[in-house]
Structures are given as structure tokens and as C-alpha cells.
Image (cartoon, rainbow, N blue to C red; front, top):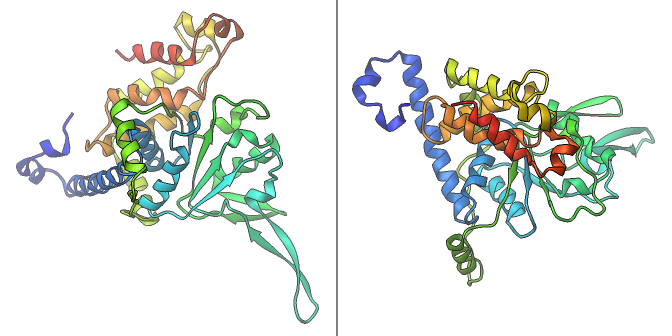
Length: 343
């Protein structure tokens, strides 16, 4: 697999103008994303994988679900992303008493000086480019479902009228895996709308030491914008233009279809999986593999991209049987077995 740096001037002169244009655009995007990663890294310590997977999600035009214990900078990551990428961001704290109108907005009756009355739509916080749904599983299913249409169609319907959301539009939700009292598990239909479930782990010793010193001094590093919404939209269009080899396409189809009981040849899947990933998982893998290749300065994705992205893309799109959970089998174990079929 050639990297951008391995393409010499001679080889580029032999390429068609379209390919040359693609190479230039990929190099430009790679430089911008390097600046973005560096800017985020000055504020968020020891979460390189999380940062990369979140950026891949946004480059793919998708939504992300961050899962981790309190204190791992999930909220700060989203705020930093909003600044670095130049997006209009808003935050909603999900609570049991939160109502759909608190997210989407509502119509209010107004009276003009002449006495005429009319309804006016007041936009809710969902009308932004980057929405942080903090502790999304603490709201009721009715409120959670208010995001379904917004996440899938990038518009909402209020009182029979459609209202388009800004572009780009992304939801980054957070969830605490420990405190489950008083929470409502996200329905499978909503989980499937998240392109990735990104597990946020504790930082390593060196990163935690740097964080300790950097965040308790007189001054803290502040993120600065390196992109804007138009740049992100252009990057998302570029991701869809990246060519994908037939080997990668077949690997994605094999991985997803082997995860379904109805079409698998693996005994582990038949015994342990209650339901497997749907077609949206294959679409997510295709887009994310392209985005990961661009993020790393490559012109096309490889099997390594598919293998690396399989866990965050599949783990929330599969469910195990009760017997599998009783035997201590985890979703990650099944995904590892699926990745092993790629060779």
C-alpha cells in the first residue's frame, strides 16, 4: 500500500489529472487533520485512539457514542472538537425529566401589535453542527427517540412541518457504563444510528503524569480553530471519492455477514449471537475505512483498516444470547473471531 510520501514526482506526472487532483486534496486534508489532532492532543492527554476514532466518525459523516467512566475527558473532548473543527456546538444534559421539546424545540403562540395571533417555531439545541448528548441513557425512551429522525435524516418534524438541521450535523453522545440505576438502555434502533461506539479507557502512566502537570498549573492549553464547517463538509465529500479495492469490499461483506446467525459458517456465532449486524454496519465500515486511510495519509483503505475498525463499529450492533453471557463470552470475543476470518 503506497503512502503519500512514497509517491514521487515522476509517478505523479504519469497519472491522470483526476488522480493528481485527488492526491493533492488528500495531502491537503492530511495536513489539516494532523493540525487538528495536534490541537486536540494539547488538551486531551493519552486518548490517541479515542481521538482518531472520533475524527474518523466525523470524517465519515456519522455520529459517535462515547462510553467510559466519569473523569476521562469525554465532555472536554467534544468541546475541544467543536473549537478545533470550527463547529457550532451545543450541549444537552440528559435527565429523566427531559422532554423531546427540550431538544427539538416547540411552537409558541405570539400576538402581533395588531392583535393577530400566529405560531412561531423556537429552535431547540439540536439546531447546531455538533450536539453533545451528555449521559444520553438517563433520559426516557420517548426523549431518546426524539433524536432518531435528526440523526438519520438531518431534519426534524414539529407540528407537521419539517425543519432542516444545519450542515454538517453530528451527535456525540456519552454514557457511563457503571451507574445504571435510574437509566434507560438505548434501543437497538438508536444504537444503530451511531457509526461507532468508542470505549474510553484510562490513560497510561506517562499521559496521566503530563495531564496532572498541565492541568493544575497557572495556565492551561486552549484549543484553537484549524478548520470550519465548510472544510469538514469538503473532507466528507473527499472520503466518498476514495477508491476501495475489491479485496476490501469482500472483506467487509464477509465480516458483516459472518456475524449473522442466518449466514455464518462459524459455530461460535451460531451458539453465542442472538442478532448480528445489519447492512448499516457494512456501510459504516466502508466509509470509516476510507476515512482512516486518509487520516493516515494513504490513498486507499486496506484490510488493516477493516480489522482495526471492526470493534467500534460492530460492538453496539450485535447482541449475545443469555447462555453466552452466562458463560462469560463478551461481544469483543466474537468480533475478534470474526476479524480472524479475514486472514
